Image 1 (tube, rainbow, N blue to C red):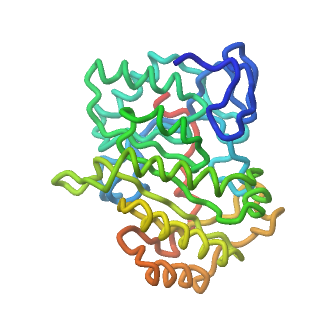
Image 2 (tube, rainbow, N blue to C red):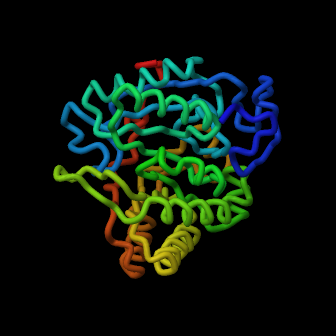
Length: 304
């Protein structure tokens, strides 16, 4: 699949002539930009394993993003363009280098704006011995068509479900259609991938992890997100792993949008109680101490 002349890779469908070098809403043009490629120790345990071990998730951070989250902890790469241009051949080498370093999986963070190049790099790397499960780490703002295009490439979906409210999604991420897009994409992910499958060491080999970051002052929306997830589980019959995150830190422009503090223990406890009430217990929760800035990696072009 070549780069599109009329880009519809994400729900924005901005129509940019990416093949001719025009910049899309996401900020990407015809170049493939990567900001970091290294072993990452702070994903869910079934992906990263023991944080004190030498192994981890082989994480590739791509530059630019189709969302405009005012609180993005990765804002230097998602919204400010930090990254280095690489070829498809170099990207495939990066994948193999992470495997050689002992990565338990290949974790592609915010890659949709580069879908054609990523597909080509995965094919090339597999022809040269890549055998790691491929994790697609996404903000959840995907089209059903893009999810389908990744069938056969992606083994594990690591997806966000950020909002149930269109108004909140518009205010904080400039994406009023986020709830509908995220639900449709998640349905397709579950249909393609099925229930979680682990290897003998407890590492996830196939399945869907759904993250939700609890935001300060928005407990009601978090409850609504959990209710949506419970409904999707009931309707699809496919198990997934919910991951309820307490790590919100007021990065970037968060304070300008009423998010100038971390969540309280009481706010997070309410969400945990709601998850238990809904039966969303086969997954992950975080300690409040997870709201630490050092969990955000340096985007220093390591491994690129």
